[in-house]
Length: 402
Image (cartoon, rainbow, N blue to C red; front, side):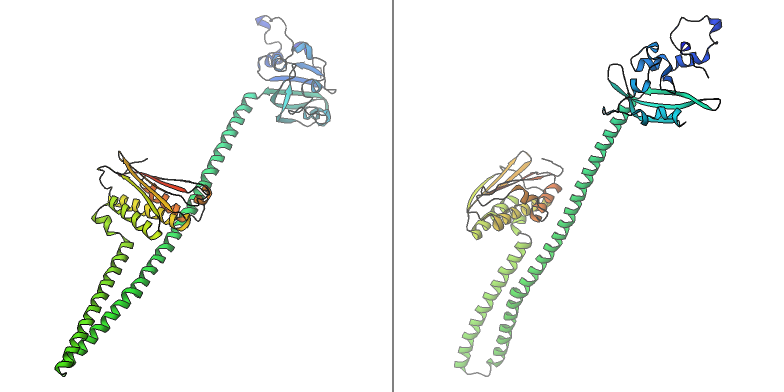
């Protein structure tokens, strides 16, 4: 098989009636892919214009030159590419065709471009005479693939982040739900014990006194006048004792009811309930209170929101009582437009921000969940030795956000 490179090099246009005399040359000239042939020494025996242009040469400049040393000598990272490893040369050395899209060809100016190439052995009379190589610049394809891969990686990263965030949130919700159930059961147990220990004992004492009075009255007719006078004194004393027991029972019932739901919230509204709770807290905690409330003529929010604000305020005060070891408490309640800003600040020991984001910070999680339910937010600023400031921001009307 004889390959004549002159057929593939630029030459004057043939007359129209001879246009089909060299169909192979016409085919190679019309394709956008690079095509070249090499002999058994790896020397170029033909190359079309598209292929020569891609590597920065004229076709005639490449004839007789070693194509591996010219355009395939190095890997993409610049490392030497031994000719013994070259798939193009293996096509005629071992009779192995190949198709590669993970390598580069090098241009005349020393730059490289990603390429997809295939190499097929040329066989004549049962013997391999060389190889034909077709190649195409896949720079744009690589860019598109790289961009697609980056987008895919970013999407997977975002999905992973969101999945982790959702898993963390779900875990926190589950833990908070479990904690809420535990708190609820503890509260039920506490109320049951108080009812049993305090109201139960009071009612037993009342029953015993009433039974005593019944027996004494039954014996009254059988007693003398002097004994009757003495019995009246004793009955009067018992009645007074029963009265005191009843008063104590009423106080205990009121306290238990207040713990469950302060009646002042229903009778006097949220603003009065907040002030009452603050005064009760500082009195029991023996702290100095700096109180400021500026709600103008703002109406009370709807009942569910009012209860949520009150419970959040209670939890803020509870945090101060449990952890702050403070001597002074500042409470600032302001309504601006349709938004409430409630701030509780102490001069206690403070804590690191991480302490309020801990997995077992159930009180803080509970406050945040209550606030989020109504479109609000809880802000916490604290540092060791610098006290803590907790702030609730929430709209006073359903659907408002801050």
